[in-house]
Image (cartoon, rainbow, N blue to C red):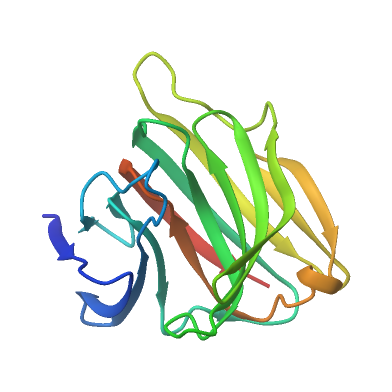
Length: 210
């Protein structure tokens, strides 16, 4: 039996623990759109906890989700399956965040690797309210787009090595960066980000390995 948690977000940024199960606290940071030409479609984020560790997320405003034990360092690989069950009204991105710190505060920092329904991916760095492109929106044949049934499935990986990081979509390396400069901070909190106006995204099989 699935449980659905609906969270009304009155502030621009909000962080709260969600008791999805007794052994796990899932934290959430919500970022409202400040773009008048591209507003959030609804004021809420919905999270449905399914069997196992799968969750279904619907936005509203953009959201970053992580758990207390979502911390990694050194060489590691993040993997997960992101099933877009209902496309957005226009391309919006979803995927992994990693190398994070102070995700609940004004000094938030993290790197992120996301894909969108139009077959593109991006890699960015977040520092406070500043966002820097590492690899801007880039089309790649490996990024699945919604078919006639209206959904798409993308298996994402972030392979953090000693000197470089590979970004993988459905088994294909789509981009590689050296772990220097903006991409040097790979140690820290990891989780997922779902940008705004995405009605239904199923996130499953999330795992980390060394």
